[in-house]
Amino acid sequence: MLERCVILALIAGGVVLVFYVIRPGMVFIMKIRTGALEVSRGKAPRGFVEDCESIVRDFNLHRGTIIRVKRGRTTLLRFSRNIP
Image 1 (cartoon, rainbow, N blue to C red):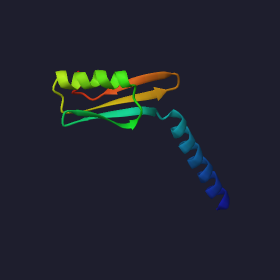
Image 2 (cartoon, helix red, strand yellow):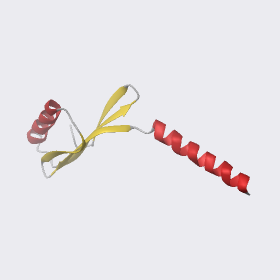
Image 3 (cartoon, rainbow, N blue to C red):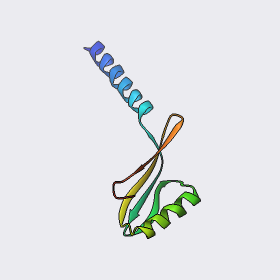
Image 4 (cartoon, rainbow, N blue to C red):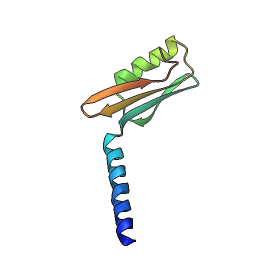
């Protein structure tokens, strides 16, 4: 019985470790709420924030999310559907 518990604990630990290694690392999250842009997590470059604010104004956006995700050596930007 003890051997089964040890084996299950090792398997669970391995699964958690694999999930931790392959999960995307979020660098920052920016949210658009009621037409205003706010950085809700992390630190975004000032120029990028200013450009996003002008897009929010120009397209009269009210809701949305912009996420910068780091995967290994590459960085991805993910936008919600309503952001052009």
